[in-house]
Structure formats: C-alpha cells, structure tokens
Image 1: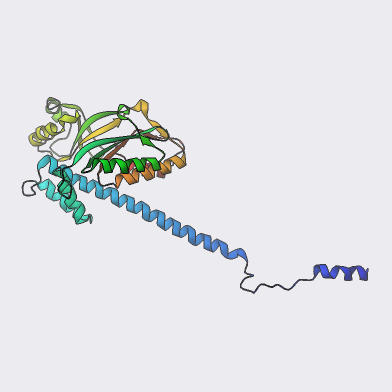
Image 2 (image 1 turned 120 degrees about the vertical axis):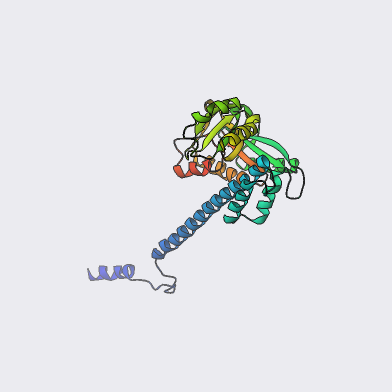
Length: 296
C-alpha cells in the first residue's frame, strides 16, 4: 500500500508555474471591464439620441423661419412673426449660418444666392416601405446622387411612390380665446376652400384644403378672425390600405439611420412615408422613426 501511495504522489504534487503573479490573476476582473464598456456604450447611445433630438428641434425652428418669410414676407419690420421665429432660433443656439440660410431659403434662394429648384425624390426600401422626400436645391444632379447613395445603404432604390399617398394642404392656426368652437369659422373656412377642420392635441385649429389653397386659407381666416398662422404645409398622407408594417429589428435600424440622414440633409424639407408599426417593434424604435417623418 505504501508503494502505491508513493507512486501516486507525482500525480498530486503541484507543479511550479512559469507565469508571474500578475499574469496568474483570475478572470474575476473581466466583468469590471464589461461594465465599463457597457457604461461607455450607454453614454454614446444617449449622446447620439440627444444630438438627433437637438437637430430635429433646430430643423423645426429654421423651417418656421422659412414659413414666415414665404407667407408673410422677409422684412422683419413688416413681419413680427419672422422676428419671433428668428429670436426663438437664436435662443435655441441655432448657428447664425443656419438662420441666414433659412432666411435665404424663404426667399427661394440658397445661402450663396442661387435660385432653388423644388422637386420630389421617390424611393422604396425594405419591406416595401414607400418614401417621398421633398427637396429644394441649387444642384439637382448632386442631390439626386447623394439621395440615391443614402437609400442604397438601407437596401432601397429610387422608384415611383406617389400612388401610395394623397396630397393635401394643411394650415395650422394658434388656439385663440376668440374661437371657442371651430364651428364659429366653419362657413368662412369652407368658402375659402377648406375640406376639413379639427383641433390638434394642443387645441390649435387645423384646416385641411387642396395644396393650392393654403395661402387663401391663411389670408381669409387669419385676417378675418385675428388668428396667428403657425404653419402652412403640403402633406403627402399615406393611404391606409397601402401601409407597410416594419417588424424586423435589422430593417428598422437601417430605416431609422436613413431617416436621420435625410432629416439632417440641408436640402431636404420633409420626408413622408407609408411605414406602419409592426408588432415586433419596440416603443423606443418606433419613436425614433416617428420623430423623423412628417406625419399628420
């Protein structure tokens, strides 16, 4: 028995290690590294989301400057609404060159003084989502090239999509204590070309009309009832029976990235889509999409 024990001793004896103590550390430290990585990823994610939100807010402010110029004139002395729009942009730290570009765009010019050309870019991206991108540019050829590249990153391509939508004009007036019920202005609005009237979530008055009738609505209703026009836009409203549901996370990520790129492109004025929320899309993912398309 003693000889058997002696023969086993070599198998149980620990062998000296050629590694130093520092190199023999256990892997307990690895979760700390992972935790730090996750924290940094979260910071980057939060910063990216904040940057997108800031860019969206600035786009809204500069578009309001464009609206004021086009509807009420570019002379601040004759247009208090334009003064208010410029001050709001400055308060939100919108860069001076962006404000100046918006003022020029409101007069149909680029920041360099070139005449702007309006056109629509149409495209389809997976899974059968239709896009209409409303643009104004001094170089249509350059813009077409850039937009085609952006759409390709989402595995999409240029294609006719207007038949997925209905085109309508929308004028929004700020809520007023003078108007407690939209029935008060209904007859005048219909006479001016209105097709529908409603109140939005903030109580503002929204009037729908044909695309060519927005200016007439602003002048007729705004002046008669002393209402402040907040916006006058042309919308491409997706037809309900043509909406495409977005479910897959990979497609949603590519689509969201495309929308953010379009929203931040200077020559893009609006983005319309027939995208619908699928059951597999999270609230956060859908919110990112909704923030970057023009919806009614």
